[in-house]
Length: 107
Image 1 (cartoon, one colour):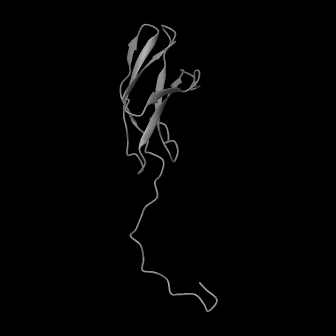
Image 2 (tube, one colour; image 1 turned 90 degrees about the vertical axis):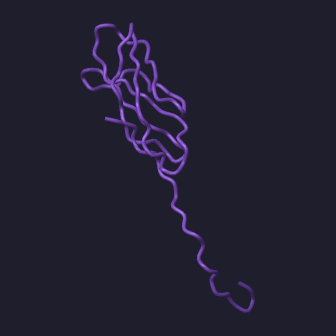
Image 3 (cartoon, one colour; image 1 turned 30 degrees about the vertical axis):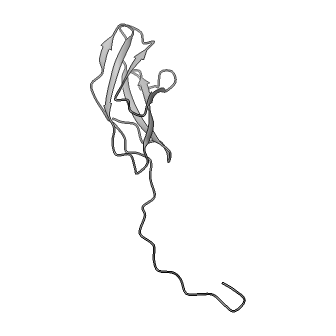
């Protein structure tokens, strides 16, 4: 654009698809320990942006979250969750995180 007018548009660029939040991980079978459990998962697709970490949620029999989310590193595929009460049933969910956002929690 100048004082005389506006030019024609340039040729089209190559296409690009913006990144999204990652897909939810697939949860594995947890293994019990003494006041702990090992939670395992497989990451889903990263949404076009590298996964930067995971969040593990502990859920009690009433379906309520127990404590804070437990963080795990970007390359992690498992986490030992400590501080559990022996004889109490727990379930777990995992979410993946990248620069765009956080996935839904796993089943």
